Image (cartoon, rainbow, N blue to C red; front, side, top):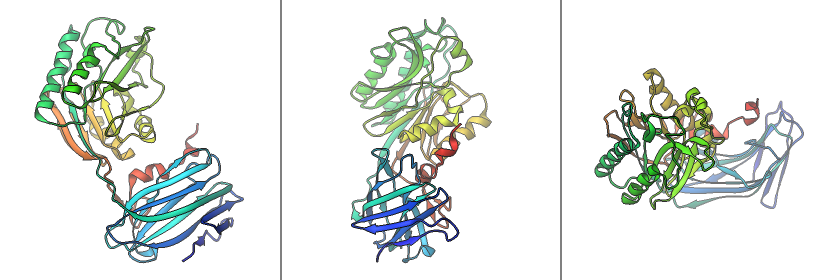
Length: 406
């Protein structure tokens, strides 16, 4: 069967091109939309790799896409599931599509669309292939958050780090083989008298780093803590860092949204939502006030985070944290680890559907969960219905970046 062409009759007519394993769609109008379609036979339950290279107009965002509809017949009238194929831009005009899917139960056909929309110019899809392959392996992550309480007034760095140590020990002695441990926001300096500068410390080889390094190596895990960071030129930041299993610095994240108190104390905000690459996954971090701004979690998702880490001091309103944290997970289809130092607010592990998997308010207690970061929790309808869609894909594939500009 050859590729068939499709477009709305009332809309500007696209120019379609086929030949030499190449498919092209050309528009003379920004009001045009069209796709080329072909039906492929598949075996229910088997996995298939769909791949294609494309040449797209510059700044095409997600206007050039590939969609696969899984159906019980050769018609989308009997569709069960619909997916976008993941793509990566290699250059401003070169795009590579590739993803492995499992054919849903009873589905015997995959209907593939090469689609272009809403942009002048030509999108060319080259050497598209669908081939049976091995299934995607689970990406198991054992994630935990340590729960601490606010240190009393006139605390010391030593007593606060001892508090952190007690929490880490209790966790690791009860839960083996952890991949990631999160501690509350800037716990080493909480309650310690002095200015922000006097309560600051360097990251690399600083006392808190060395504490985390010791236990990261001892328990072969990744540990995330945060401090008031002092750079060599005395610049201050509120900074989270991760020590990996070998005791090395995996990366840092500097708090972007500062409270008034932090601003007036001379702390300087971070300028990016960088992710930190670990041996099992990529983590995106939002520190306390960052998470009140929905852009923070979305930027971490866009930058490639597999899960979110949220260290904070506390949250005064249950009506806020009980809903907002779940919303951040749902909006981005990512799980979140939360570590708190407030007796009234739980540390928790929340899955990509916003479900609280574990939580605790116990001092030196912990929240723990084992998750498959490759799991896709599909939802009925969304934008692809009547069928099951994947919010993890859809929240990126159907973003309208051009409309978000200020």
